Image 1 (cartoon, rainbow, N blue to C red):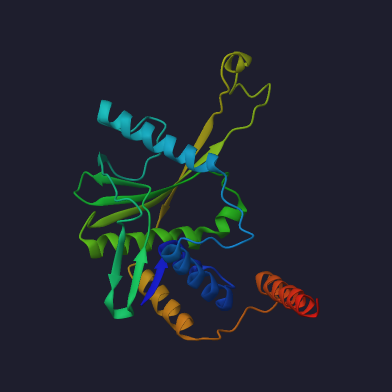
Image 2 (cartoon, helix red, strand yellow):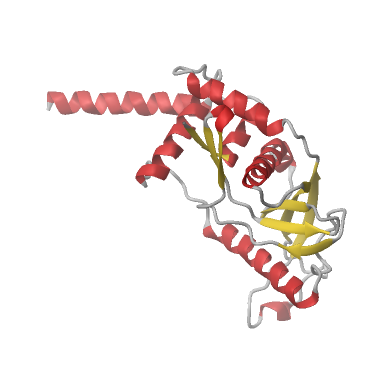
Length: 252
């Protein structure tokens, strides 16, 4: 059985994906989830990003619970929001897909119930919306589609009629832009954010196409790597260095 996260599966929606690296990454992630062992040379994501995401979620939820609506700064997602759902934790949000013998896992950021009885699935991104993030849009779009598939197969949050991203972009301090006053920094440190929504078009065949591609790659014990792949080059260097160290140890 293949075990894969919706995020890893979504990588196959990007252009110029290295199949060799993809297979290694999926296998390593599966081993880590079972053995709880980490791999070396990994840089964890700074905790501040998850803290800001959590802060936004709590603020929106509490405001909605108090006022029956989202805050005025919250972007329009194209329809009226009538409720905020509690998505399952990452330990419980998964599904088995028998036609591909695959267990897909995920973690939902936010689920809104809409006035027509359908649902909207969203993801918060604490970042500036730049050309780099625009190039990652196929990844983010596919990730949410994969979560939509998990929800559908579990019989929750169905039907889904909206998928959206919410970028929370920090605004720089400039003396003359009127966004900050020096008094904002006398007792506390304040940082303002601009909120940018991105509504995603729903493609009902997207996840299945990605699953077909993933199963094909994982069934190939030696998938073709991408020409001049930087990770493949580094992996070869690491392997060469390890071999050299072992040879020296034998001689010593």
